[in-house]
Length: 546
Image (cartoon, rainbow, N blue to C red; front, side, top):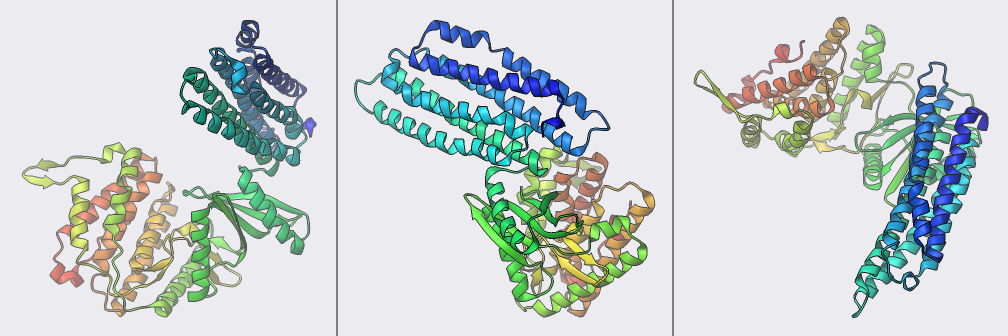
């Protein structure tokens, strides 16, 4: 409600909306009867909207710095900053239109009424922004966002007509070109309205949301509400590196989630859906149930069963040693059961070095100091890291896994859930699951422990101990299967995960430690005798210790 904001902020927002509307009205007047006086009237006021925007920004920053400012008000203040920026952007686009139209010799030949009608649509959207934001009116915000589609359609028509006219002989090329620029500016105004709508909806929901996501969420929640009641609320849980967002849906005053909402690019969400369905077919009980699926445009969304319990990361960092031991025992039992049930004699090559090469550019963008051209020290050649990877890739070709099993594919500690009451393991984020070398999951899990940015010495030792114990369990399985190249493949998998994980680590000390471990492991693999692969031992104590 309006009481969430001080009167001064509300006043400045109203002044800004009125100023934007006034400048767009001047643009309409110019389209009807172009004159230097109107153009000058617009250019002379170019600083007023900007000043109002800056006043709003300054007051929002001041209020956000207060410790007593509640989260609901913080969301509104942050959204108000973006709304002010978008409104000022509309005045800039209006001025840009007049600059283009001011150079047109015969404005009547360019359908000025059509352009004026588009500006009228923008003005109708501006007229709803204030109440949509201050009254938390999501439906009104949706109306503002829907105007983008109308503007896009009309602008596209103007552009098509302009392009067709340019192809005719004896056309006024300069005037038509300027008209095309104005049509494009009208499209940009539509984009601003869509963003304004998304900002207001996000403030109302308490998390970032775009237009397509809102409709997917609305559709899925309506289905859920039929069985859970109408009093459903949404809370952000996480955002993935692939751009997907994960939210929890709760029922009334109940702190527990009744479902999890995940959305993102259609391709990514479809992969997640297929991964979950594959686990249900191959090894039922590990993956959550999919309650519903929706797609809209290039986006898609899933409504997934909420799994009770704690992530393995949470247990590792916050729970008792007894609970951690129990969780690890259940995890390793579950993994060995999966490996046993999905075992196939089909040999498979994970291509750890190929995976690493694909991500090295991203690593170097974050840590350019890791890129080197090699050196020589006391007659000993020190290869550049790229050269090390290339040589290791050629050597890896002789080290395929002797069998394959169904793996998670992204086996980080935050993708494993343990329910202490049921003593049950579940997997989430399954879009990379496939039949592959089990060593891939082993290496990813071990490095996902190491890269946790924890400085507390006892807790750090606990993390290293968990990684080493997990290795011992995996090695015993390898021995039982007669997997003689397990240690060499694990060295390559660890090197891959250590190096690629640095692109998510800004702490120079931790990133450097991880990158040096990757280099050390590659050098060890390159000096190993492949004819005696079963004698190679991973230098575990040197790697998983700080």
